[in-house]
Length: 409
Ligand SMILES: Cc1ncc(COP(=O)(O)O)c(C=O)c1O
Image 1 (tube, protein in one colour):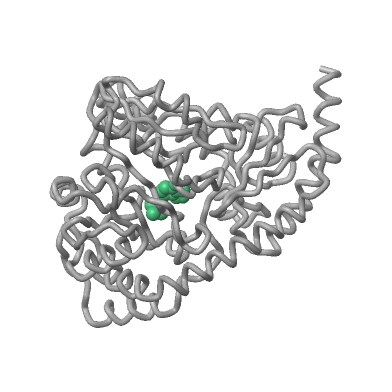
Image 2 (cartoon, rainbow, N blue to C red):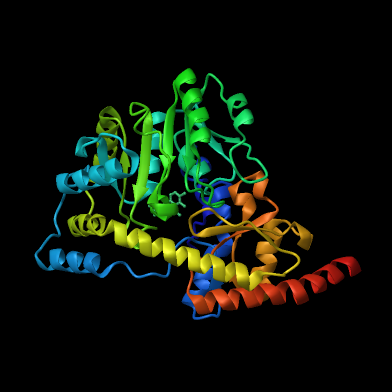
């Protein structure tokens, strides 16, 4: 009889690289409830997914039209590994306008989303034995994306307001530290790093010769579309990551980039060459169209996020087990669930089992948020209202029942 190979039996026959351990850790587990919810939705079941940052806005019409036009015109062939020169120039212009850094297309490499750009940056700046520092709370895919290089992700603690603990930051830097990585606006907290925080980071970077990796995926959602940046001040060491995913509701287009020193861009281009061999031309042309309407698209995304955040906050007001932190920017909110008596992970699983609302365990963003769940409020209004209703019922009915059952057991 033929033996079926499963992930558990496979390694009896051939060995995997140690890399597979580094990319399959806690971060991957954090998505299990989300994946279960997506599978349930695909089966037509009644689930509400607030576990991922994918706005229910449509991609701007001009962007879609441009992609269709290019497809019809036969733009379906290989493209340059680093991205088309016109797109790299448009990204450089947008970056110049936001950060004040003097850059050209030579500083830019286009990737399949900021996630892809971070992966490449990680491999270009860190190696086994190195350390990369980030602050809690952190975007759950950072550990795997940094540790794929063999480096270790070191988590610096945060204050009670989810801001970087600047005093502690210096103490986690060692001779092995190669880079400091952060997202501003932050996912999950919505914190936008201020000038003082950046000045402390800049001083540490200069003192210890560090790369600075600024993940600005949510920059267009920051107040006025502005995020304080170190790129113009420290152009030789800052790598800025960006994308169209959040600002233009283009998550599925996979259009992102890095902007950094030309030497890094050259290495990143080599990586793009062996990893991607060029990304779709019609998407790149659509991305140029998207950058042309960025001001309007970003303003739309900001208004949308602000309105949904207010709606969600009003919908859960008065639920005594939940304490909501108002984000400065972005599409996520941390809900402190400590008063429920559950950890974030227990709350996430119980809520999904009882009411089919999928949220993310705050522990996926670090120990500081283990008593929280992260919710994305960038969702359809009817869904959002239903989610608030289900949360209210869960807290009023299911939590007391669960506590009673636990006492009897
Ligand atoms: C902080 C952060 N960085 C990067 C990404 C990935 O973005 P992209 O869709 O551009 O790959 C996300 C997506 O949620 C994110 O929250």
